[in-house]
Image (cartoon, rainbow, N blue to C red; front, top):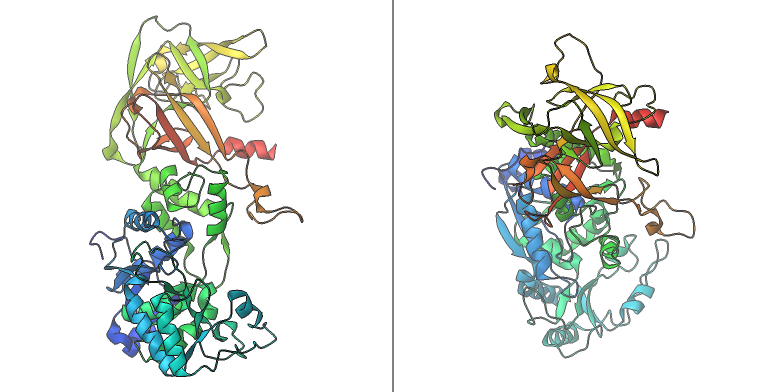
Amino acid sequence: MTPNAPTPPAANFIHQIIDEDNASGKHGGRVQTRFPPEPNGYLHIGHAKSICLNFGTALKYGGKCNLRFDDTNPVKEDIEYIESIQEDVRWLGFQWDGLYYASDYFEQLYEWAVQLVKKGKAYVCDLSAEEVSKTRGTLTKPGTESPYRNRSVEENLDLFQRMKAGEFPDGARTLRAKIDMASNNINLRDPVMYRILHATHPHVGDKWCIYTMYDWAHGQSDSIEKITHSICTLEFEIHRPLYDWFIQELGIFAPRQIEFARLNLTYTVMSKRRLLELVKNQYVHGWSDPRMPTIRGLRRRGYTPEAIRAFCERIGVARNDSTIEMVWLEDALREDLNKRAERRMAVLKPLKVVLTNYPDGQTEELEAINNPEDEKAGTRKAPFSKVLYIERDDFMENPPKKYFRLGPGREVRLRYAYFIKCVEAIKDASGEITELHCTYDPATRGGNAPDGRKVQGTIHWVSAAHAISAEVRLYDHLFVKPDADDVPEGQDWRANLNPNSLQVVTDAKLEPSLKDVKIGDKVQFERLGYFCVDEDSKPEALVFNRAVTLKDTWAKEQKKG
């Protein structure tokens, strides 16, 4: 494990099991875990939970954790995914002790399959996939034995060797375990171990034309690597008897499979199939779209590995399925960025303010705090001049009760600067307000009045003469309902897609200290939220993504009203 690895997770039911194993002397107190993704897509926040659990558990017990690609389906797998998964694991702050591929074990798996054939525990079946499905039976009805189930050992060995040699076309034959077609567990009804598939594999090329099924490769790969605790999501619980059956029949090292509830998150989907559909049908702009729950998308949006690890720690590890509120993930990011992100002023919907009594041509540099949570962050100079930009939402002609921002005759504080009072709102021919004329009180520099008068509102601003322009992308939830699958009868899940999940501000005004930011930099736009410099950004054309909003008491008041 990396010496700078994150703090180990708190105790959970999985760790209680490990504690019991260690107390009994099982495995000599050794703990070995693994994170075993199939490289057929990009990792998402659900995988992050598994990564943190597997690597964190190894860290907690001074053990080891492997990264293994369960690459048993060459048709869906790609080197692109293999590389991205490694990058994501490293970005989350973890380093594997061993990097392996299930395909590294194909020769050993084949030899073990031959061993089962010789024991009369596996046979070559000529039924098609559709025919096998029809003979599988149901939860209340036993399956029907294949007519090829009682082939002789010699015939099975010959056919299996010829399958490996490439003599038969795709789908012509399979190798099936011979277990129990009447078992209450359908997974034990003579499951398929190998199928014929003439396809180039991203890791081993064209060496093989028979490929293992997941259930055959997974447990045996765990055994080869001497995994002590095989931590899986809950859908694999029903596969555990098969996992154990293979290992017992082979007489090899026996890991202990433990299942936990997968992560379900509001306002999004986790299904790889649905995520792929979002990408292919261009509902989003690729796998790294900041609205996607992929690690790439979260990273581009502005999430930090520390925030994701903290989120995974807080939600804990459970045995029963549940859905976690998105706000838990957002709060983890707010808490992390509150400590580290420097503050800057930015105006997304500019409204011009002219200070009529401010000297023409004068510019001041005001002291602004970079991060009130971090004294070491220091201060910066914010230029101030006669013409400013403020947020259009910070002025109302007819302000309601509890609105403490700028209005006709009202006085507010400009952050780090002066008190100003609105004396006139200038409108165009259509009646839209185009600029405000205000006066400033030069005695209030720094934000306090020497006569002791108080103002209730403080707003941010940017000097018009010094402002830099930028594109700002405002991201919201990808779906309009917490349960993305909750749709009326006759509609599908896409009916819940949020049409306003992305709004683009093309000419935001930012204070000039932001001109040298780099891709991936994170900053708090005061009063607006936390933002991240997007990968589309260029020095002459900055692009920021909103990572997460700040808590807005005025928005809450609007909802009450």
